[in-house]
Structures are given as structure tokens and as C-alpha cells.
Length: 397
Length: 42
Image (cartoon, rainbow over all chains, first blue to last red; front, side, top):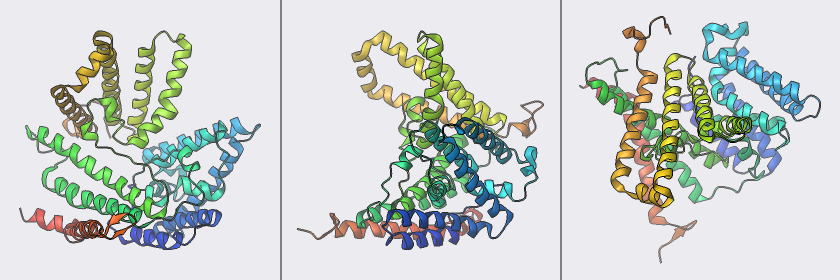
């Protein structure tokens, strides 16, 4: 099931307007948090109505809240965390492979997972679960659990806010002044313009899902990558803009990714909240574990293995199929090569030599173009209809 | 000295709000229906 939240529909904007009107005069911390939680649940109710799916959402929130409370405890912590991880993984597989899980026979489960965007909720659950079990933060209250896991303006396509960032927000955020409101409206308008004018025109006029054949595939590869950025970053623009109007911190997700000069820099500019999640919760723990196991003797090998595990999983997070597994393998290869190249340059040229190398405008242009083409190619691999050509024998979608 | 709101000159507010309005009008009139019309025209 696709996520039904449509930014062109009235429901999203009516709820946004209502949230702004209700939250603006409520400067008090606790009441504000409760009202925001009510609005987040009301948003889901607008889409689901009095249905089994709504009951699944409510039960899911209460179970998550109770599990988090147990995870922070001394005795029940480990079992609660283990049970929580297994449940999140199971629900993720059901969400991504509905034919396999068949909704586990629970009415409304698939619909609920699709609406809340469970791919993102699962990552938020991991982040908060880790924070609480490591006692970096106390377990959130019920209202905070709703507000962290199901923020209505981030449900369609993220971003993935870290729990550290969520917990560090002031209980009473400053009332947004005219400058902040204008900035928020600008982001919303820019996002809608990018999605419904620029991305829509590119999609309708130039994209054929790579079915046009011939050399047009090379043109479409570039335009498909451009479309992806315009469409995806538009959702983030709207989320950041609405967040500003509501006084809810919403992380930036893109920072001019087409200017990245290598794959490592690309992941500091593209889907930033996802790459930071991977760094916090996968890359650094894996790298530290490998370094300890090897006594710190093979740092490049440790980083390469960590990149491989992280991006194969990242590919499968997008979609559980061979396309995205190949995409993950390509990203990991790009990151490993980039890391090795950086190491070789530093060894041969020294720090000052590297500075001169990086400052060369021609090298910069070539690096940016190569990175652009590499990333465009990985998106092609992830979306090309190989099955129709029979290129992947024995593979059926 | 020009008048300001929240430290931003009023003229800049007007210009930025006009650009917001233009983008939103384009989204409303050229959004999904507009794309369909434009596409079918080819």
C-alpha cells in the first residue's frame, strides 16, 4: 500500500492550519505537548476514520510507550528491548513485503503501517529505544511518544529526527515571529512549486520508466535523478516549513547534493537525516566493534566492512528487492573507493598537497560531474525495469 | 531609514510574499490539472 498522504489534497493543509491556530496561543509546555499529540492522532483519524487501522495505530503507540518505559528499567530493560527490536523488524518486513506477511491476519495492520510511513517510524523507534536503553534520556511520556514517532508533518517522507534532537527541544518553544513565519511559508511554497510544477513537468514530459529504449536511457538517467531530488526534497521543504510554523524542530534533509564532489560528501548532503541515523546507529558501532576485535590494526578494512553492511541494509530499507540491494552495494563500493582514494592522496601528497589538490577548480568540476553521474547511475539501477528484459534470471518481483 | 518588521525591511517582506503567492498560484492552476493539459497538448 502506498502512503495516502497527498500534499495536493485539502486534508493536510486543513490540519496544518488547525495546528497553527491551536498551538500558537498555547505557550505552556505540558499542555502544548498534549495538544500536539492530540493533533498528530487527529491527523491519522482524518485519514483512517473509526477503523481497525486506527485501533492498530493507538494500540501500537501504547505498546511502544510501555516497551520504552520497560527498556529504561534495570531488570526488564534487555528483554523489553529485545522484544521491541523483534517486533519492529517483523512489522517492517510485513510493511515492505505485504504478500509474505499478509498483514499477519490483523485487520487494518497494512493500512496503518502505510499511513504512518512505518519505514521512518521503525528508524525513530530504534533511535529512541537506543537512547532510553543506554540511559542517555529517560523514557518519553505518552504524549511525547506520539509526538516523536508520529509527527503529522513528517509522516509522508521524513525527515528522521534523532531522539537526542527531539529531547533537547525546549518545552516552551519561542513563539514564531514574522521573520520565522515568512521563512516557513517560503519553504512550503518552494516545496510545492518543486513537486507540483518542476518535478511533475519533468516526470510527465521526459520520464518513461526507462521504457523508451536506445540512447535515451542516458538522457533519462540524468532527468530521473533530477526528478528524484525535486520530488523528494520538496516533501522535506514542506515538512521544515510546517515545522517552523508549529514551532516544532524539523531537521534539514538536503544541502545542495548536486555540488557533492565525492560519495562521502554526497551522503552529507543527501537525505541527511537518514545518513546521520546510519552513522549513529550502524556505522560507528560496527566500526568500533571491528576496531576492538582487530586491535585497531586495520582501520581502512574496518571502515570498508562497516560501509558495506550499512549500505546493504540501507538499500533493503528502501525496498526489499534485488534492485535496492544492488543500489546499496554500489553506494558501499563508491564510499569504500572514495575512502581509499582519500587515504592514498594523503599518503602521497601530504596534508598540504591534498589542500592544493582540493583547491584546484578543474579537479573540483570533474569530481562533481563524476559524483553526479555515479549517483544518477545508482538510481537507474534501483528503478530500471530489468525484470521485463529478463536480465535477472529466476528473479520475479 | 526604511521601515522594518522583525528586522526585515517591509519592501523585502512584500517581495518575498509576492513570490510565495506566485508560486502557490502556479501550483494551484498549473499543478496536476495543468500538467495534464500541457502534456495532452503535445
